[in-house]
Image 1 (cartoon, rainbow, N blue to C red):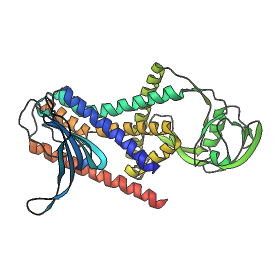
Image 2 (image 1 turned 120 degrees about the horizontal axis):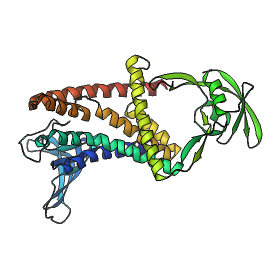
Image 3 (image 1 turned 90 degrees about the vertical axis):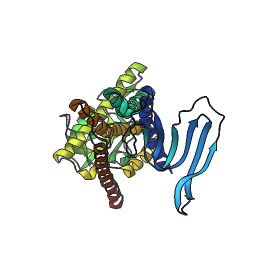
Image 4 (image 1 turned 90 degrees about the horizontal axis):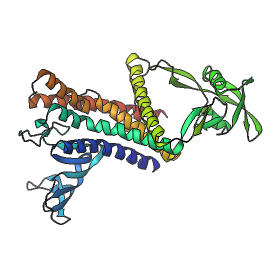
Length: 393
């Protein structure tokens, strides 16, 4: 249940924030918003502000006039007093929880349902900069969410300052250090009989011997303890800014201390953390492109759910950190110039601006359909990877 609730929290927050960005951007430039949906069709329930009041609809299967079952409103009811004016924007909760969308007038989106009339409240009637502002707003909101979360986390937990003292600050579940009983606050004394005076002494030895047994001596509450650990192999940045290298790991971090941080410093760190994770995404994709990593390592919704559950069990700070990281991933993916994504729409508008001509509606529809096919193929790949991991384990 923890995994399910964590998944709902992470996806719910990210989808809502992303679509809220598009919604607010559309309102800011006078574009009519027809629908704000959490989840993909079919719709389950919706609320629509009208001049007659707030219209509530509940959707389910219902017999139509041709004696066929059709998914349509089974309950339609005004649930509030009349209003001076209504936006007529339908706010709905749909049944497929892996996304969401904002449908605006005059915009070829995922639904491929569009009617261009030339009305001034259609997106197609706005200038190129306004269109790009609408298309990029979801990505900007995801980036802002990551910065806000990382800022808040830094305010709460403080900042790490390098001391290089061989004192353990944290251990990772499932790694040798935790299994051996090493805990936060312990001081590492020797590794393979070599004295450890600095944390870098420890990492130098451990990183050089992946998947090998080592003898570690440490001090726990003024008592010496010794254990034989088998290092694990894992990737870390190799220092060139792009690549990764495999090293030995025992799952212990240290060599730093935590101090308090003010709002300004926390905000700067929030921006820095967001930039760091953007860089990690670029490194990962570079490794896949150059053969340094496999497409099999790409995860999808099942892996996100598993990691969300693990983060939730580790505490709220870990869950918020994970949400911020996934928000950055969502922003990066959406800005890619692939038809069907925000970046694809931006590319299309940019090409129209360069050529000084507008692509016909049929051409836009074909481009959108091609993009959706590519995205569907990617979804199949990541779900296959997720299922392969489950069966392999």
